[in-house]
Length: 303
Image (cartoon, rainbow, N blue to C red; front, side):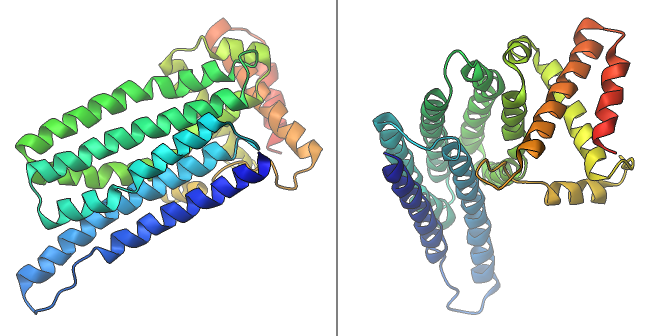
């Protein structure tokens, strides 16, 4: 099944690449010099970028989900085919909305987004259940991180459908911004999963008890420590947005377990994450006075 899984990876990438190619081929060329014709083309290009960002984001999420496993089940294969079948309808929905922006076409685009998101969640859940056992608690961690987002995204998508019914031209702009934002910032959620995977079983049990506010506080502490590490101990200026952008651009997209990393490097990264959790738990949960000792050990990693 490992060879078949690799073939499925290649097949999925090929289908997504064809979808992106078909979308740009659907753009209507300007055949006469007129301002309205060029404005219409600009509108089509704008809507094309909506779908391109959305499909690119789905490719990224699909690739990172499948990087978690070396084998697969028939359930994963069937869910992947279902997801790709729905995703392949994106060029049709894009062309309809670009050619005739009405409440029906915009709502059809929105419904397709909802169905596609649901199919991907089925696929991601099957991958997580195959990758992790109940004993490891990573299934619960996945639900803790993604579970709170799914209802919010569902409500937001329903709200966009209502806006599309009354104000389709305005809904188009919402659909323009949402996939781009999601493409740029969805790496944060995956980093949370990676950080949780580095914790010990006892620490993951404690992690599952966190509130959403405490989870955000822990993630901010981890990101701050990483910024200090990348700056070689020099404090970054919070007001310098260009420096923050540069750090984000130079950060790793995903941790590749197959990359040639020394065991010592992996152990140091894992130990640092666990030390970060210990400092957070002492400072925010238990109010332990020994937190300064842990923070002192953390500073050694950045020297």
